[in-house]
Image (cartoon, rainbow, N blue to C red; front, top):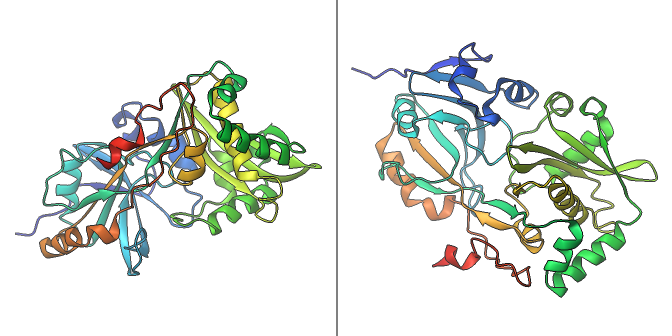
Length: 334
């Protein structure tokens, strides 16, 4: 007898959702509600042993590799790009239940896969860049880093000295700023979703805009969750990127903000590892699990793992003079 998928699928957030998420911030209904403004819809799934978000999209299975094979994949993940899992509950129960459905499924952003049955293909997805804040002020941070990295920051600050940064109300996020976001998305190596302007106007985040002569040339958006400041999204005018060293100045502004807020960590997200490591970030591993109801396909995917999974970043910048960067990169290559 064919087994039937037991998860109940909803297009809108079900009433019981908030009771099941155990204060998981990124799964809160108001956060997910803003995500309806994306290029593809997502669904809420409720099961007695788990809850999760899912969406289906046709993408290249070898996104992190050199080959190309576009297939429809159902992602069990948050409907916007952030390094947190899009589920709450027993991950093995999710896999066992989803196996009853046709298709290929991908669980994203797990912090470990030790509990997952070895028969299912697991591998790295994009790693997260973490800045551990030990600093009393931005000046303290500058004095703590080695001269060559301090010189690079000075160059960026000089190029960006004409820029003015202002915090705006989310409702004031307009077409000009959204064009800057789309610039970054169109230049991204790993675009997953395309968010509409209304997402930024609705979601509860802080937006800081960089102006040159009252014209917006870049922006960053952040959110403080407990003791961690999260860098959510950004945008920039790529025509002016090098002239004002926009990307580096955006990163430095986030460092300033995190230090001023006295947060313990700044989560810089999952791309731009080289630049982020140069300002003092370390890496935290993130994993994905790919599986299907077809045992043979699972075996094939497992064999293709080296061509599918994300390649570990090969950088080890020793930024600080005296303070050792926790999680020193060498341990990742043992």
